[in-house]
Image (cartoon, rainbow, N blue to C red):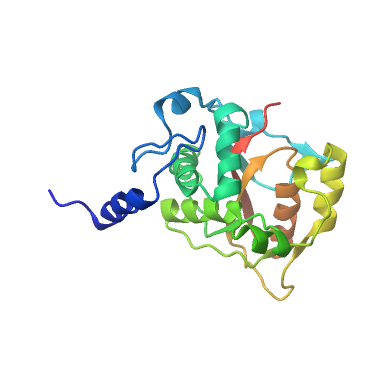
Length: 231
């Protein structure tokens, strides 16, 4: 049987650039995402309704998004994998998450998505890193759902501290100060938008971005992240 072209290219690419497990860095088969040990250690978020595991208020205000979900708790193998996505663009992990989160959307009957976007990274950091990991994840979701991406909607200004260095109170203030509508003339015309990011921590960032998307005319904003920090 003839191997499909996209599999064939991945197979031969692996000869020169071996596939590594994002959880432990071991070399693994070209068509796998994790080694068996790491895959067995992943802590998946329980199959509750999204409102049971995500806040209904952020900074004492009702949330601006209409749905949120994540695949894994941000610890152990999943945490290492997100760091691999950030440090070396481990796209297979983003694809792994997207495939499974697409099934969550289906089971939760979220079927009316028109457009996909991602939480932006400040321009200086993105140029230094070479990519935005949230956009890698958003592109993977685009392939799963067959919906277009638009990363020109929101922009982030430069901040001196990284998100992980901020306290919860500082995150709330930083989200309000650092995220802005990129073009005030751009309108979303009652479209439903899927907003992607790598980690849901306090929810301050995605909530701010959801507010901005609603200000641009979005009807609904759905949020997907690869990981959710444990309560």
